[in-house]
Image 1: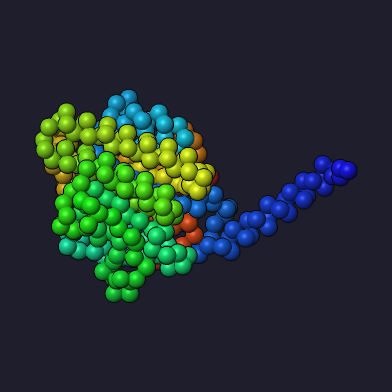
Image 2: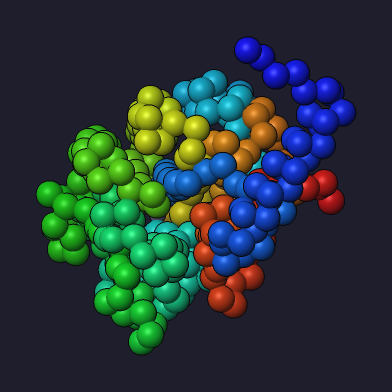
Length: 324
Ligand SMILES: [Zn+2]
Ligand SMILES: [Zn+2]
């Protein structure tokens, strides 16, 4: 037996369902949202120390062919994307996980001054430590799991696997391949809902001053990023429910000065972002000026928690907003 619903009645029924779903979505998160976000998970991958000139500013994307062909058509490329803080590794990463321009030491001796999105997320969702992970090639990035804020230190901390053997500060840098394997193991075992992965290859090679080695390292990171995205798409826990942010902690000096970084020059500041997942339109290019603190703001909005006092703006693509 079949029931025939007249088209007009079906439309009314559909509007009621949509309206109810929107109300439920609005009530569910701290941050009011105009529509229900699809993503339940977010992953940030940092290609350490890649300038825009070897990333999105190269129209041929010669050093990032896998991202250009495998991820960009499925997401949005932000070509006018900036590090407006201290252009060093720990401050850049800390900014990405707090939403504030962090001015912490670059040697791993200082925790981020503000609570991290891992902590805010864990507090808001009551998720345990296995739901929030920082997996980094550089041992000094072990600081990303916690904050020096007296109200947050030691509370709702992220799980951390940093440096050689995942042993944290003092263990030394490890190869990105090991970081990739660790991230893979953790994704399959714990199914974290919020994760940051750091690939140090481009920065380490850049500091060596060998131009060809630096380019090869960017291509190496590009390959690992693409493989990570393929794995997320193939895992039923992550497929269709995960937003991926591919970005950089800082750039490097312009031209032949590529071996170093750390000042306020154009090329240390101009970095890139490619975002993909269910909340981002496919094959779009956004050339409006945006910056690192917009990434945590967007993740907080999508996953439904707030970052008190943060200045970052939610990327308008996740709301389908009209661009300025
Ligand atoms: Zn760096
Ligand atoms: Zn510079």
